[in-house]
Length: 248
Image 1: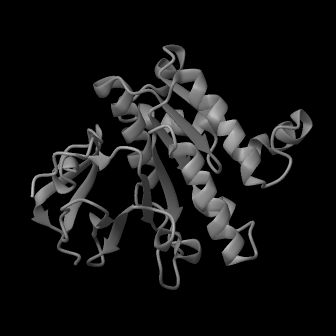
Image 2: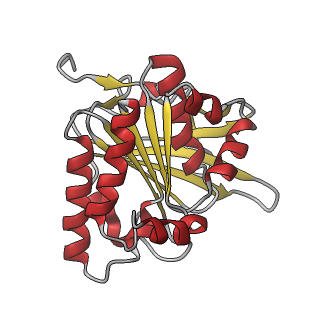
């Protein structure tokens, strides 16, 4: 059947939209999972940058781990000027990285890992730029603050529901532990995300690695079930839909 009723949010990442029927369903929560160094933050920021530049959709970046200075510097390597987007009102950055922890407590904005407070901060940024795309990088930092899986599920569900209520699309990153199974802390995708994208950077010989991407699930969509080659080029992430990863 034709997917005529679902409004799609294009990522603008070469090759990726071809795997997901043209884009993510608007208003959904998408999890981007992968081990350290697989390109999660690059993909997330490329999603925001392309949204602003190509599709006139302002965005919000919530960074819980890496400083905005480092993220901006890294994205400039790919010709993506996040500072320029901020100046134009197309991007708002909520800096909740560890480097800002003292300042947050002093200002009373975020003295503890209370997700209702986090939602309030995010929504202020969303309203400021009328954001259509929101990225939280990385979810794992928050998840480790919860001792109870039940509370974790409930809090994350409320977080996603509040942020996407007005139709914005939420993209979360989560780090897969180097050891063990699953897709991150408590397998968040099982109860939170309607879509899961997994990035790999697997060693295939003593001298080479293979980067790849898998659309593990995407509710309401006919998505590719294969693992496709992916590279980080001078212009950011690029996916080859017709090229199956040699590492899998």
